[in-house]
Amino acid sequence: MAATAGAVWGRAEQQDFRSRVRGTLLGVAVGDALGAPVDGLELEGIREAYGAEGLVDLAPAYGRRGAVTHLTQLTLFSVDGLIRAQVRRDTGAWHPPTDLHRAYLRWAATQRDWGPDLRRKDDGWLAREEWLYARRDPTRALLMGLADETMGTLDAPKNPGEQGPEAAVRSAPFGLLVGWEPQLVVQLAVECAAQTHGHPTAYLAAGAYAVIVHGLACGDSLDGAVQRALALLAPRAGHQPVSSALQHALGAVRQGLPTPDRVAELIGDGTAEGLVAAAVYCALVGEDARHGLRLAVNHSGPSAAMGALTGGLLGALHGETALPPAWLAELEGRPTMLELADDFAMEMTQGPALHGPAGSSPGWLARYPRA
Image (cartoon, rainbow, N blue to C red; front, side):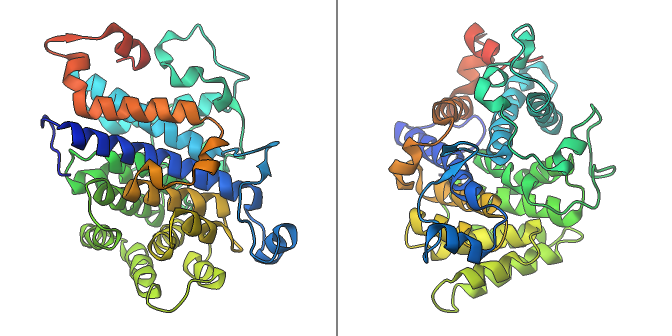
């Protein structure tokens, strides 16, 4: 698929795109949910708790099976922000990083409030989903980066020393902008990552992850998408740690059967570039989505972020039907995710009919306000 802005989509193209959008969002969420119960545990502790093979199925976290963390919550708000950026484009106010920042501030409000305030009409429908107000261990970098209205930029980033993977995880939806040129996808992910994760390693890893998802959503192979990401990173200052990690992951594929030790070695000290690289590895060597996701969470490292990153790749590559249906059936918030995914696919393929020069849908503008 190589759709461009304003292109006419055939029915088969629309169905394929919707499947990849659903797959990406559900993949992030189901990988997050799989990893959440063992997040931060040593491999020995995982095996003591779940058996010699480690965690092989969803297990309880936050009081239920299939619970997601802040990583999925923020990914959904990325989608909401992207839709609203497209809607606001009609007004001439076209600056997607600002719209994404507003979306992340709406997420930050869910972490402070008990529940949705129905008096705030400009928040759209996602901010009124009660289940998103559960506080699921958001990191200090996220809370501090979004603690006030000031938006971090590349010139003045928030948390300039922060190298964690959270910004990379929430960048998966940027890769679904299949009508955008790849270099613009990288730039958007980088600028939005700097709103909370200001170290070059973190924001360039987010850019790399987004453009890899973009390649997959456009029908490229995973290896091909990584090679394109490397080419786009090369001109950017500070790219070497991210590029080296991705090249290391591609080389590791040829080093025999995958093991938790190899995954842990790729992850390194748990910074963003290592996790993105390890997720690429797990998606490449996994026999199927279930196997790849199990590889992604059974190690002595950040299992929720690894599962989410790997799931996003697998969902974008194969579509929603490749994800384990038994896991999806128990996934927290799945109806919300499907509704949001389908809205995103509709906006990207039929946006002019929803809010174009010929007229606007009041219902759509209520869901995704221009304000």
